Length: 81
Image (cartoon, rainbow, N blue to C red; front, top):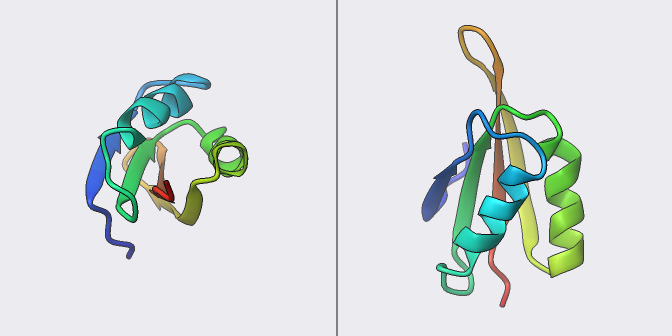
């Protein structure tokens, strides 16, 4: 299980909202901190690595969990600058 400094809940939001919210939130972090983005949008599996590629931040992990009725995705992004 990965550890994060800050957690961002984007449950119920669909592409592109989780990425837009991540983009805003990561600005509040200091370099080296890890942001955990919690989402139920499967699109995050490809959107988050693509966003990291574009912005230069580092995707350090992705976890999937099955909750009662849906899959939950947790993307871990390290602020690099």
